[in-house]
Length: 238
Image 1 (cartoon, one colour):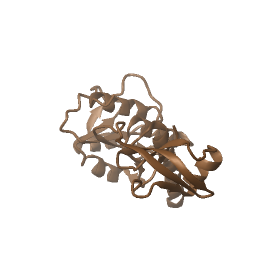
Image 2: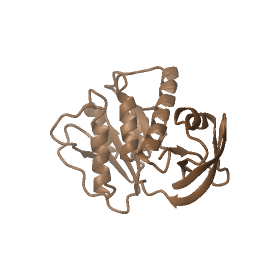
Image 3: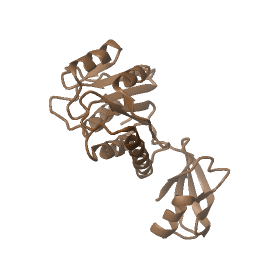
Image 4: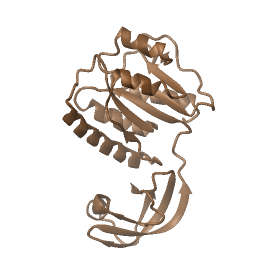
């Protein structure tokens, strides 16, 4: 069933703008057909189209229910910039895997080093990709793609969470079970060239838990999926 997001939906049961155009022109839906709307706060509404015009779709709410797809922990993925469209794929898959927030990071070995104007455009594209992935995967929120941080800024931010998981190719320990007292988790993933030794030492000194994703070498766009899968499994969300 088609899925859309709208804040304050219960008091305003209609969809307008680009989503309305998509419903009417791309999906070719009409009066009497069903769709789901999420209020971005964890509730889903089963609806029937009651009326439609060029830029607006009026809906009748048939059922309100709590969304059951959101993890019990809030996971922020700190993702170092990668080349080409690898970030697009990583963002999409991170949302599918349950990340609640994604923070692009500029570290020493990042080959991609766009200027501020380009980063702004990329952030907007990544947010659109995240929104689409949230709809496709049945999320109860729209995960946010934040502004790009420097490595040092990312360290400060990530290590403020209840648990900070630093995925490092030279690590030997695996991720332990995540207990119920942990509500916020940061996951840090490096670029194609990995992290430098000083960067790894800085993260460890600031309290990040250094973990391995196995003995195989993972691509930069694959590592986030593996890391998030491990976090979800160890926290009882998979």
